[in-house]
Amino acid sequence: MPPTPCALCKTNRALIVRPKDHSKLCKACFIQVFETEIHHTITANKLFHRGEKIAMGASGGKDSTVLASVLKTLNERHDYGVELILLSIDEGIKGYRDDSLETVKRNAQQYKMPLTILGYDELYGWTMDQVVEQVGKKGNCTYCGVFRRQALDRGAARLGVKHVVTGHNADDIAETVLMNLLRGDLPRLSRTTSIVTSTPSAASSDPKSHTNIKRSKPLKYAYEKEIVLYAHHKSLDYFSTECIYSPEAFRGSARALIKNLERVRPSAILDVVRSGEDMAKLVPGSDDSCGGNCANGAPAAEEEEGGCGSSNGRTAGGEMANMEQQLAQNELATENGLEVEITAGAISGQSHSSGTTPLRNREKKTKNKSEAVASRKPPKQVMGKCSRCGYLSSQEVCKACVLLEGLNKNRPKNAIQVGYEAQDTDNADSMATATSRLRNVQIQAD
Amino acid sequence: MSEEKRKDAVQVTVEFSGGLEMLFEHQRKLQISMAKKGEEVPNVAELVSHLCNDVMKDSRKDLFVLDGTVRPGILVLINDADWELEGEDQYELQEGDNILFVSTLHGG
Image (cartoon, rainbow over all chains, first blue to last red; front, side, top):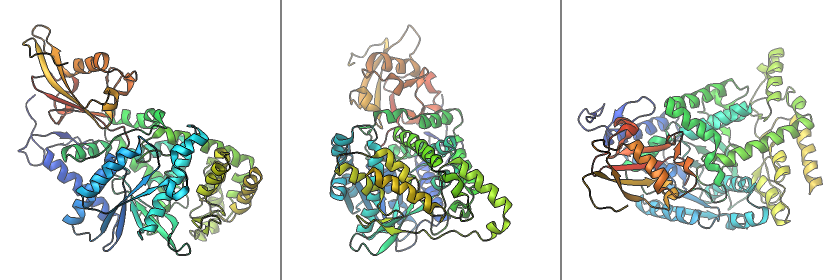
């Protein structure tokens, strides 16, 4: 085949076929276009503001490495005036994280950025190796996910940073959209499509000074394929591995589905992301109805949990396991009659139930009572401190502490924890009774 | 794998990255010689099946080849160009070609 010229510069040989529009580009034009699109995502969604200190979740994998490279480039090129630092979480998995952390250390030198590595042992007194020794390989991803979520926030708070960016890409989002769709969980779907989410956290120096950690995903519209090609053509130093505790994750079915769709119709991935955003707007009380641009983004609580390894969502096995747990939790909710209580007038704004029934009921109520619509306001998140660790939590005891207690008592309580966790992001008043009922179950189980 | 250059064969460099090297005993780079069948030049499809059947020792063949072709999510670059630009697996190998297989499926 004769070489195809680049569609943009018309001179160089095209090396890349863009999945989103089939355009054929040369290396230089591709890199330029890729960076420009990320810049557009950042400016269109007003992700950054001048003077902001931003921590990049860094795993050493392709997504976070590309994120660091692109953000550094754009910050210099377009003078965002933001301070970029790297934040890595060491789960304490020998032979898995060790090598990727070495990559992050090299990245920190290459990009001249300060790096902080925070270990699970330091934060929780347990490495994942020790957790697995205790609970076995099954279900350990839940621990890892809950711990990691808090770890990034704690790390950020410790560094005095209020904004964490992660390397979630379009494929990750599309995968999550599909999984939530297949599960019938539209409220969660709406949260996962937001480009900005916020999670509560507490500054470690002073547990009383709570701060909201904002999270954003500048690579949300970037194809995984292009991320890998960008890393390849810019000869970026990244590390690829699979978590040794979730070998099954590689065959994650949602992931395979996305990749199969991409081969038949490459635009499908962004189409699924956009469909997810549109569906999110239809979810009653969705934070996404503001287009994901709200200063206070959707609460991210459950979104990334269950993901193992580095980039969340990559390890679909963990996600699938999480999904099963969610299904079990829905059953639990049904037993407790939650769906009836959820639909009371207090349903509004950020009420996120995981069941499908509540959603349907909620819509019905809204139609019948127009005054309910008029009076609907997003509720303030009722956040308290975890009575054990002081971490901001909507529950008396935060998820990590519940898990830790189980570990420390030499008795894992994974299954119960999930039912408990389900109510974590529900702030509607009507949930209070049901939640306390669940809490009682929890306490009795203790 | 390191056979002498022969006129009845095409010598190419095969590279694995993005985690794919794990399926090939952590080898990142291989020299592969593909025999010609008379005048017929071996193509990428034949290279892939050779890699899968003869080179790969890992039993999880489906992580590399699925439904008779490279698994979706694995990028193939022929001399740094997306194989879509080169005729995909029908591309006929030329002496000294570099064929890179990059997995997008692995995490970090």
